[in-house]
Amino acid sequence: MEFQDKTLTCVDCGAEFVWTAGEQLFFADKNFKNEPKRCKACKAKRATRPASASGPRERVETLAVCSACGKETTVPFKPTQGRPVFCRECFQQRKFAGAGGF
Image 1: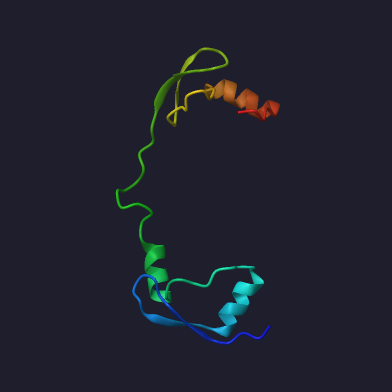
Image 2 (image 1 turned 135 degrees about the horizontal axis):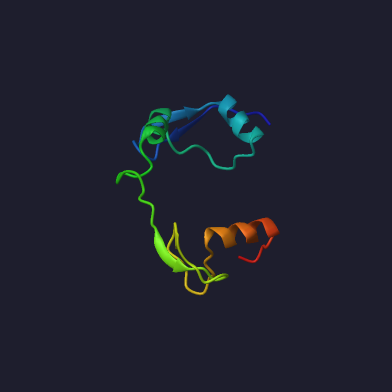
């Protein structure tokens, strides 16, 4: 397939940019289906911004009772009702035993 340079419009700044034949060939080789949406400047700006403006995410520690041994423990997530919660030891035992039904 012969590729030709194509002019696209950036979704962030509205500027036109050229998607070269070489870039299109690269996309085709990688089986990428979508055309680029942003110009190189906006893409670079987007890549350097922090993932969230609120700063680092706080880790949630929730007090829970282990579903296997009944020991009180803390887990780094908010448990979902109806799903079992395991202490570190029981979790490791199940993990190494190959239990897939979490």
